[in-house]
Length: 387
Image (cartoon, rainbow, N blue to C red; front, side, top):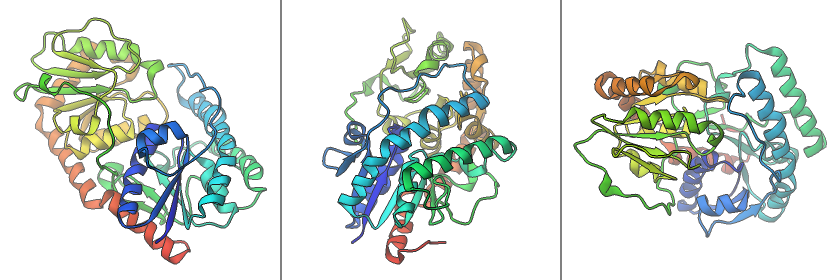
């Protein structure tokens, strides 16, 4: 049996898809280990997971809610991706030394994974947990693309003594893309990209949820901005909660930062929720167009109201709207009236639910975690690039 090392950033939305693939590989008898932030991995991959700890920057960079566009991209690279890669590199080297993997699976935002694997001559696969990079968002910005290339060149020199030439976001051995054409659209893709669909599997949860609060006869909407947008949450969550006041529907609002005050009786506020099982009981989702939340909602055939904030979210929101599976709002202008009207639209116009169900069917047909595991097994057997 083969040994697979998953290198992941300290981000829930990037670890969760990998856990499904890792569990599938383990079920097939392979040996799986992780390199990343130990506390998060123990929580998401399980207390028995084999984990090699990697350092992360001591303090998380503070990013204002109004930071968008090119400024947000510069912040992402200079304040997060590059420092994270530098911090993780010693741990990735140590993990490879101790575990001796046949294949490294490196998340697109854990740049050190691909760079170290390439420098050491190991087959490696990219885990693309969002589809934004697949469509080359910098195609119309050559100067920005050149700047990113310069950053990667400097990182390659520091991490691998200049060895290797591949972009760590796109392994020539293969890219696991957790989406399908039904959502992605007709964008041209490199031949090494494998569209496997979302990795949706049961995951560990210690969250208690008052399931009795849900009423089958009452339409219920999940409102969430994910785990990485606390700086932008207060105004939007307040407006979203107000949108349900006096309405004949219910809302579960995820408020990890505790920013909400008093809300109407038909609004349930939770610090966290068991999202996957909850989505099976939802009639719509209001979110920031985070790729994982979008895919998990569509997997369940649930239509969306998407209000992207920054990073990959505008691209994903555009994919949702183009697929006919949801309504897009401008985050900064999403007051209670606009949110309420958008929710009414996706709940009452059946085309949105039909489109969401069609995307969900495409996800299941793509194979998800089993399909991803199959590609990885093939690469491990060949020890060479797979096309």
